[in-house]
Image 1 (cartoon, rainbow, N blue to C red):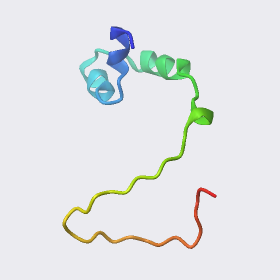
Image 2 (image 1 turned 135 degrees about the horizontal axis):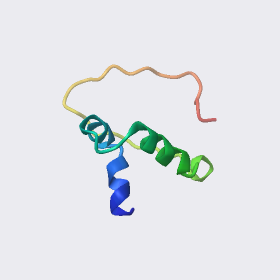
Image 3 (image 1 turned 90 degrees about the horizontal axis):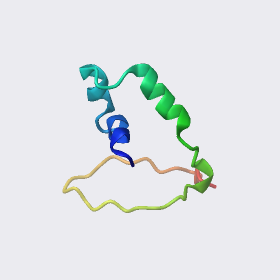
Image 4 (image 1 turned 90 degrees about the vertical axis):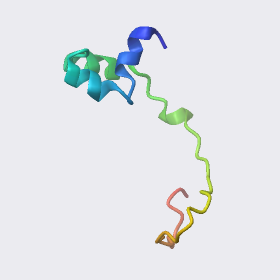
Length: 66
């Protein structure tokens, strides 16, 4: 990622917009140039370690990914 692209990093772009380091039009153009990688994405399952207290969960009748 070129140094200029870090201005648009999702973690800091809102701050950069507020500070005027990035203009909304620049950000929109940057987003439009990004490749759509939807078809290259992989589904993965992860098990979260216990957090020390019960978390309410909902049991799905059907697997939404099937």
